[in-house]
Image (tube, rainbow, N blue to C red; front, side, top):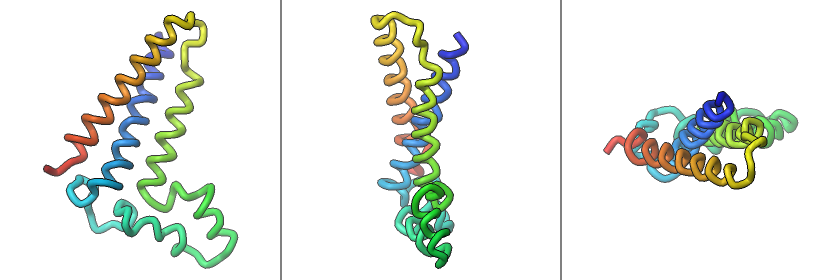
Length: 126
């Protein structure tokens, strides 16, 4: 039972992260994230990974493995992917294949529902 709870939490977090990414990318101007910070603004924040340093090594780090610290879009993308892949660790492998289909369907339904609620209502200032 514990694995189902952890699985549900991981999917919940992953869906919220995707909602944040899509809100930043497609509805930033009318979102709760609109502020004076470059870190949240996707039209400006992508420049952080190029502007934070002139050192070639640190520049490479910021543009590749450490890109998640340069802006909100990359951070929440990383968290979303890590939590989605972590679901594999908590998937109930002892279930028969016919039962796994129901688990997969429930996970997908949760992901879509959470994403829709956050993207459409919670992160919007409308």
